[in-house]
Length: 105
Image (cartoon, rainbow, N blue to C red; front, top):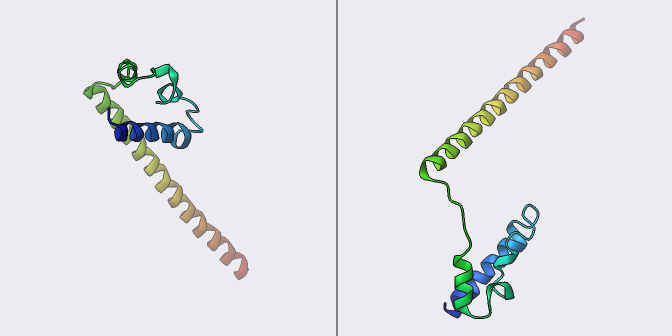
């Protein structure tokens, strides 16, 4: 592994650990710290250890089901948002009628 690639990977993992997931996944990537002794002292040992990390990737069919479910949820959220906006407009109209009727009396 070249020094430039090593530095890039190290910076990426540090960013992931410290910035992007810091609140939700605190320390999740601590085992991937390229300076950590856990991975080994030389590139060969580090590569072997990095290759041993299992990453679960769902099969295409399952990914499609997940995507469809999320799309369905997005559509429901959008519909609810439109419904809320419509109800707000209706309420506004009713309130205006109420105040107009009170002023006329």
